[in-house]
Length: 269
Image (cartoon, rainbow, N blue to C red; front, side, top):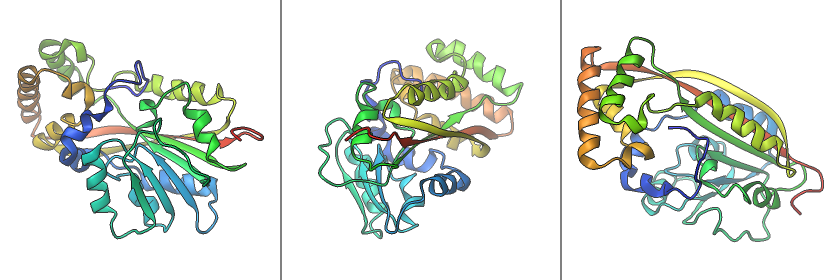
C-alpha cells in the first residue's frame, strides 16, 4: 500500500469499519520523530496544533501529553468516537467530525499543523493553501508516515508469491513504492508556493507481530479491505500458513518518514 496518491477521493473511510483493529494494530511513531517536530517548530506556551486526519488519536497522544491545545479533524464517526474516549483526560484536545475540505476555518490560528499518514487523502489542489491559511508567519507543517519495508528474504519472496496467487492486484507485497513516497512528498512540498521545505528525516524501526496480529494489521489496509470477502479470506489463510512455517512470529520493518515545512513569508493570508 503506497501513500503516493492516485485518486485522493478514494474512500478513506473504509478505516471506520475496522476501528478497533486500526487502533490496536496500526504502528505508532518513534519518539524521536515527535521530539524533532517540536524542536523545529518551537511552539509557544501554550502552543496550538491542528491535526488533519487524526483517526483514533494514535499520533495525537504524544502531543496531548505535552500539554498542547489540539484541534483534530476526522471524518470517520467511529474513529473519532474512539479518539474522544482515549483523549477524554486531555480537555485541550477537541475532535471535529469533518473532512479537511469541509472544515470551515474560523479566525483562530495554529502554530503547527500535523498530519500522520493522512495528508494523501486530502485534495491536492487546495491542501497546502488551506493549511497555510490557518498558520501565522513562521508557522510549521509536519507530515509523517510509517511505510512498510520489505521483509527479509526468503520471507519477502514467499509472501510475494502468495499475493501473486491469491491477490495479483496487490502483488509485490502490501506496500510497493515506499521509496517513491519520499520523492513524491519532497516534490509536492517543494512545488508548493505556500511552504518552504526545511528537512526530511527517516527513522528505520521494527515491530514484532504474531500471526494473528499481522493479519489484524492487514485488515486495516484500505487495499486489502477493498478485496471481496472470499478472496481476502483465501489470501489471509495462505499468509497465516506461511507465517506459521516461519515460526508464527515476524519482525516487520518500517520506515517512519517526516517532512517539516515552514510557511513561506507573505503566503496564505
